[in-house]
Amino acid sequence: MKHGNLLLFAIGLALAFALLSVFSSASSQEQGQEKAKPKPGTVVDKDKAKADVKPKPKPTPIPRPDLGKAKPDSTTPPPKLSPEEIRKAEAIENELLKALPPAPQDPELRRVILDGDEAVTLKKLVPVPIPHIPKPCVITAGDVDNFSYNPKTDTVTPCCLGPGAKIRNFDEPGVNKLFAHQVRIPCCKILAIRCEVRIRNEGELSYNDGLYISLPGKPCQTVWSSSISGMNKAWPGAYHQVFTLTWWLPPAAVQQINRYIFEAPGCECFLCLTSQDDHAVDYWRLYVYCCECPTARPPLGAAGTPEGSVTK
Ligand SMILES: [Ca+2]
Ligand SMILES: [Ca+2]
Ligand SMILES: [Ca+2]
Image 1 (cartoon, protein in one colour):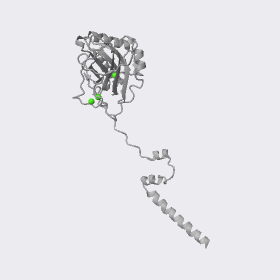
Image 2 (image 1 turned 180 degrees about the vertical axis):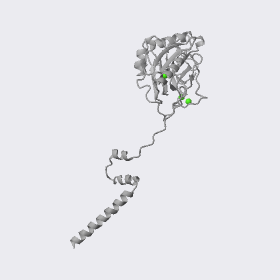
Image 3 (image 1 turned 120 degrees about the horizontal axis):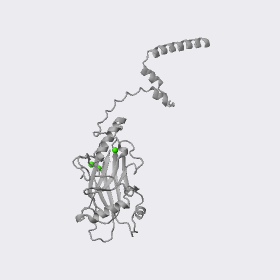
Image 4 (image 1 turned 135 degrees about the vertical axis):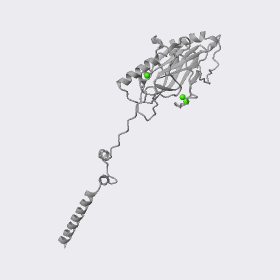
């Protein structure tokens, strides 16, 4: 009996196996993949699982934007430039930079004093001891709105640019444009100025971009300038990466601004905030620390108050 049962079982098993083989050979590749699926609870060999997944179709290459007409969005990778395109872009930049007032040669006017503790920095920057830290006059130019661009409202008041300059408004995307905007500053003796600007890398040759602060006039006089990479080693970072730069103007620059304020007719005082050329500008903000000692002139300009802000 036992042998008989065993024989029947063996025949059954052989038949089942034969049927299964026939079924398997006729099955599709998809079924094969399904068969390879691990049972619930088993450990998945991730590499093997990856190898089994159908390769994704190659993405269609993104057309390279025309120089100066780039309108990238945050999902587009930075366009990789060929050596020839780099040469072209450099030529465009060199032409563009001719519209800017010359950068100061004096190393004291090119110093970068990065933002630090307010009291400690003021103590270092102000030549005479101050009894207490005065409240700064805050001047905001442009809307603090994370680069929300509206061509009707984000317009700049251009300053210190030569004829034919390609001008960029606040929040305006794209490359090869100069940002230049005039702000009113308080008519006071200034102790120190802390600056803040929020910018976004727009690609192309953004690594060589720079910032300038000039005194309006004929000609304009640049009282401070720096390359952006000299202010933040992470610049330009990833395409469309946003940077908020904060720094103090060196005493030599403040001295020049004070001389200008002292001579400004009618106590009408302005600074020209400029930057070039492959980054968008969300806003600029200046914290102007006025000396509270009495002067013959009004302590503050009409548009600047410690609480308020002006855009022009
Ligand atoms: Ca805006
Ligand atoms: Ca550039
Ligand atoms: Ca803005």
